[in-house]
Image (cartoon, rainbow, N blue to C red; front, side, top):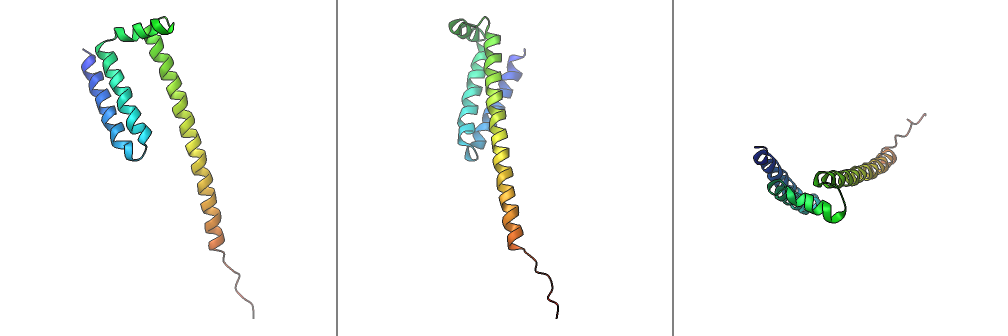
Length: 109
């Protein structure tokens, strides 16, 4: 019963990721691929258990949780680094603007 909503959600995420490929080619390629794997695992949940067994993890659900945690940490680090870079660029822009718009005091006669 939950398979159809999950598949629909994954397809929606894949389409969204694909539409973002002009802004971020990596996201545009990896999101649909990840969603395709997700759809396959929704349809055949035993595949995650088999992969977990091959990798020495107890259950497929544990393997998915471990992968999700690793991806989440990478995404958070990426967002953090991008925000820091953006902050640095804004600081440089503010300094340049301040230099360009220096107001001289009125001259006293």
